[in-house]
Amino acid sequence: ETGVTQTPRHLVMGMTNKKSLKCEQHLGHNAMYWYKQSAKKPLELMFVYNFKEQTENNSVPSRFSPECPNSSHLFLHLHTLQPEDSALYLCASSQAHDGGDTQYFGPGTRLTVL
Amino acid sequence: AQSVTQPDIHITVSEGASLELRCNYSYGATPYLFWYVQSPGQGLQLLLKYFSGDTLVQGIKGFEAEFKRSQSSFNLRKPSVHWSDAAEYFCAVGYGSYIPTFGRGTSLIVHP
Image (cartoon, rainbow over all chains, first blue to last red; front, side, top):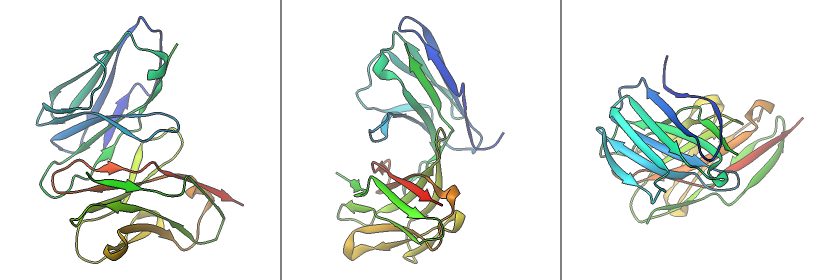
């Protein structure tokens, strides 16, 4: 595997379900990100992890819970979601340094909440 | 705060025609600039980036972009568009250790 991988690629869940999205990066990076991409809206940064520590949480509802067990893996745990949470969830990684972070993205998980 | 504007929501071109997608940023310092492309149902793929040096940057798939400080712009160009270039294009701007900010995207439609 190369680059950034995400599983599953598609997920359909009910509002009472609990599911998790997984992201893995094979680039040796030390920063990982979750973004939400909804139709007709700009890319929304949700969470940032640097060296496994969460450094940013952009007022994301608590029904989204991130986990970063090591610098290569990132999870997004989902519970009691709402239909408006249906979107493409993108994971990205970068080598954080004081010179501009070039982010590399995974293919995304298309989430549909019924 | 840093911001980036892509003034065109949609651009339609004929296959073989030239292409220019506009991107403007607002901030006083010299930015780091990126262009990404997203095909339907896919993630964002980096086309090119500017950090410093030559203001004309070459990228993958025959794309190039030019940083113009006087105009606060970083427009993406391609001399001859192929049908496979139809996608969503995102400009992003970053400063120092700040996480890049993305524009809203421009959807490119290619007519045969």
